[in-house]
Length: 252
Image 1 (spheres, rainbow, N blue to C red):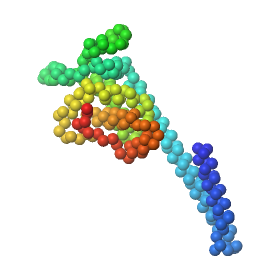
Image 2: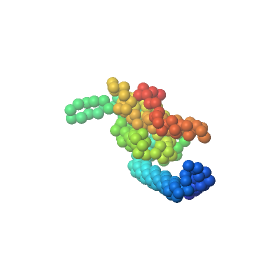
Image 3: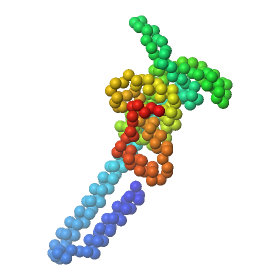
């Protein structure tokens, strides 16, 4: 703010000096006082208006940043629970595998329901301590709804909030990029999303399952691969006006 005020004052002083030095020849001595007061009044008004506009813009920006940080903080509290940590650890180890042929019974019908199974053999091959392996394998099966609610739904919400400009992308990237990318790169998670989209006849990405998760994952991966310097600035400028291309069929 200090540098802006210094620049603003310097510009105003420069304009005043130019007006005094290059006094228009067409202005007579009698009308000079009117011209003088009018010019300086216009300059003062322009400087004051520019300052007020800048202050208002700055305050709105601070309010937006505060709201964005508050949203991310709330999601942060909801996201980092014991069950979510367990699921993330299993995904990171590659030990959470998708299954399509689960059977579930209700009072009216017997249907097929997808689920996830913890692969004990994969878990045993990791270098994790035995106590941690036992904690991760404490629950062997997870329903698809549990994975949606505890893990993927959070990423979908983050993508939706970021895409609508409610939260800042940099905050999302700093807080959640590793978790988002780890889940998106997992073959069983993407197999599950592909399974959900198999019966979608509309071929519209905006209504496809976990399209917002796909959007924020691709955006995070794009940002991570950028080189520092002009590449980052150009990417930010491009993404401000154009979203990443999301294809409903490109999951692999």
